[in-house]
Structures are given as C-alpha cells and as structure tokens.
Length: 628
Image 1: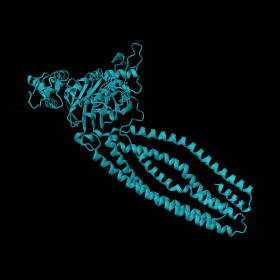
Image 2: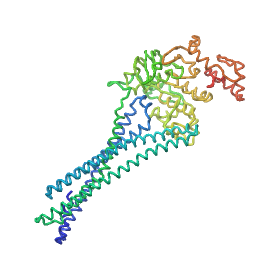
Image 3: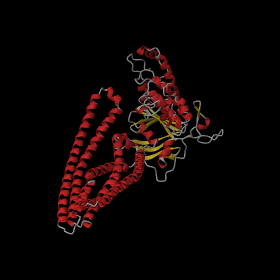
Image 4: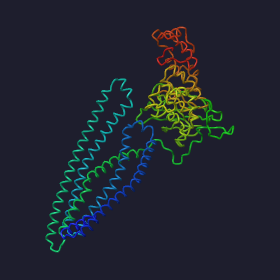
C-alpha cells in the first residue's frame, strides 16, 4: 500500500534531476513490493496446513455420516448424486476458505485503505468519494450478475449430476447393456445429457463476458475521471511542489485498487458456487438415520468369536488349523427370537407389512424361511441385522432386545452369505480379509480352505493378489459364493444368515458348495432364506411366510402332514414338468420313469448320477421343476 507513494516521490525526483532521491525511492518501492510478496507467500504456506487439516476432517465427518445413515436412505438415493454432492461440497468448503481468507478480505481491506489514503494523505475528498462510489457500483453490479450466474450454475449442477448418473449406471451395468445390444442407445442418452450440460456451460461463459465488460467499464471510467480530478486539483494548488509525483502516485493507486477487484466476479462466483455446494453438503449432513443407538447404549453382552481358555489359548484367540476350526474356537450359543414384531417400509402397502411375527430360533439350530416373493423373508434378515427397527415388538438375541444395544455389536456377531455377493474391485486377499481386517494370513488361508476356494486361488497367476473386478465380475457365480463363505468363516460369527445363498447357482456348483455351507452352519444358529424348499428340508424349524405373516411353522415332516401352504409349495416345486410328462413323484427316490427322463434329457447319461447325488443331499428338482 505504501509503494505508490515512494514511486510518486521517485517521479518528482526526475523533475529535479535528483538521482540519489530516485535511487532511494525506487529502492523503497521495490522493497515494499517484495515484502508484500513475502507476506503473501507466508500467508499461503500457513494457510495450506489449516486447509488440508480442515479438508481431511470434513471428508472424515461426511463419509462417516453417510455410513451411519440407514439402509432405507441408501436404497432410495442415487449414489452418483451423493458422491458428486459430497465432492463438490468439500471442494466448496475449501474454496470458500481459500478465496474468502486469501483474496476477498484482503481486496476489501485494500480498497478501504486507498480511500483513506486519498482522504488523509492527498487531502482530496472528491477523489475519495469518487473512488468509494465507483467501488460500490463495481461491487453491486458484480453481485447482481453473479447471482444470475449462480442460478445458471445450479441448473448446470443438476445436468452435471444427470450425465454422470447415466455414465455410472451404464458402465456399472455394462453386461446388461450388451445383453440387449443397447450400446448406441446408451451413447445417445449420454451424449444428449452432455449437450444439455454444455448449453448451460455456454450460458455461464456468456454471463462471465458480460460481467467482465461491465467491470472494465466502471474501472476505466473511474481511472479517467480520477486522473482528471487529481490533475485539476494538483494544478490549481500553487503550494504543491510535487505535482508530477503526486499525479503518478494517484494513477498507481487507481490501477492497484482495481487489480484485486478484477477477479472480484470470479471470487464472488466461487463463493456463491461454494455456498450452493455447501448447502447440498449440509443437506447430506442433516440427514438423520432411521436407526440410531440410544445415548447410553452398551455392546450386546455376547462375543462374536468365543474361545474356551483351554490348552493355554486365551479367550478371543481364534485360529484354524488344516481347514478345521480348533475346538477352542466354537462360537457361543445364541438364540434369535421375534416377539410380536410388526414392521413395514415407508410407502409400503399395509398388506405387505410384517405383522405379529412371533417365533424363537434356539441356539445352535437351523431355521428356514420360505414363501412367495415379497412375503417378508429378507426383511426378517434385515431386522436381525438391525438395519431397521421394528415398529412394534422386539427382536432379541439370547433374550436381549437388540434395539437397546450398539448396532456394531449386534452386527459383529452375525455373518451373511447373500444371494448376490457384491465384491470390492480389489484383490481376493482383500475381499476375504474384509470379514476380519485384523486377520493374519494363516487365518485367511484356512478360511479359504474351509470354503473350498484354495485350489482356485492357487491356479491364478497372481494368486491372492488376483483382482476380482468391479463387483467381482471377473469371478464366476460359484467362485463369488465361495469367497463370501470364506469371508463368513473368517468372521467366525455365532449367527449365520444364508440369504438365497445358492439359488443363482447351477446344480453341480451348488453341490460343490453345500459341503462348505454345512461346515459353516455347524454349531451356529443359522437362518436360511430360500425359494428352493429343498434347501431348508433338513432345517430344525421351517417358517412359512405369506404377505408379511407367519402362516405355518414346524419341521418338514410336520408341515407336509398338515397339508397347508408349505405342502402346496413343496408339491408345486417337486412336480416334474418335462415335455415327456415324467411321473409325478415327491418321494426321496426317483421313479423308473423319472430315471428314464433324467437319462434322456439332452442325451446326457451322467444326469442320472447327478440326480442320485442331488436326492441324497437335498432331494430337490432343478430350477425348471424337472426331476433332474
């Protein structure tokens, strides 16, 4: 702020031909300019650490909050929009601090200082008033046009989200796109969305040109009238010896004061954009989870990995040896009980809500849940995991109402093998170890042995470092299921949920996985959600669901003798529907006609043996209802 004064004095020394004065004042000018640069750089270096710390903390808070939100919220949101809002919001917070602290406030302070210098040093009220009026007009015009640009930016953000959503959906579901030969259709959708976004981008660029031209008009007008007024006042004052130097100083101040304001539009635009993005981020952070822990909630009083203190092994030291868990590593016996539970999703019809669910699964037993699609089977698993809290009644584990305990402790004692195993785009090692991030390599290897996955891994060129691809698309269905089973073995939970774990697999692959599932269910409380009734035939208890209610429960034999809903479902699934009209037979052994049918299908003579193996294991038909 002082350098223009010394520059003016140097100019006055030109008139008097005082070289020493020129040298001294030019030196002052250069020194003050360099000092200003040093202070600016020091400010940036000090600020960058604060900015990085704030950015890391905000990222952590936002990501943690998103993970704390309920499953219902995540199911109804487009993750592309959420990620974009999160990224833009965090960038907005960083830009708001950066442009506000390092640019906007210093620029406003410099403008005020120049007005005071004109008033006190140059003693020209007219020039100070002119500058103040020009700066006010400059700021008002900039803000008005930038508000208009802010609306365009908001619309552009919506279009930006849209074309990113289209791209994300298409690339994630590229296999479906290729099934229907819709590459050109998706490309056309994406291109149209990008074109709409670009049109808004062109309008934003046009508005920037308007604001730049308007700012330049005010700036050049102020410089013109300011220099004219300064020149007139200096020439009319006979006592002023340094007219030339004062004129040069005024010119320097007028040029300097508008230099930071040249980017005022950009600064204000960044500020407005940042505020808009921060509002979206604030909306995300303002979302409340449907399921929350009570203020003084404690962990569920059971452990997820229970060990007896025998053979000198401390409690919690769970390892596996040669593909079998040590005796000390048996999970605790935990029961699961629903006490008059009622629940429905937001917007769900009343006739599809869960109503009056009342049953108990004894510790260490296996319970199957069957019924038509939409009967409420998967909702039961979500309630056990406490992804949702029931609207009435209680869900209990070993007699404890899980709503009163920490969610993390409840989920810590439950493992799941889902129907569609979604894997991270990472290595096999990472995906298995996800069941227990602190596991040793020995534990992970033994979990893979139990899941019958080790041979597959050993045959891969990269072994454990083999990438599984986006959502595990590089693996087959059976390999993905084995990996999910290995992950569950590694977690070693006392409660296991098998959610249609083999329904998407062919019979041969299912047979190979059944042995691993049997080991997984051993000594654990197991909930099996199934469409194939043969998967739950040997369960200790079978719960039959229909429109959110329990219509029957009992063993397979008891339910078959009742001739109720279960019996109808069983006979429907087990009745052969081949083109040769094989004999209808629901017994464990195939009739002669069925054996002939099995041998004749596709001319495959090995199917008869496959049928024998299947019936010995679960006595089931294939997905098409044939005897094979």
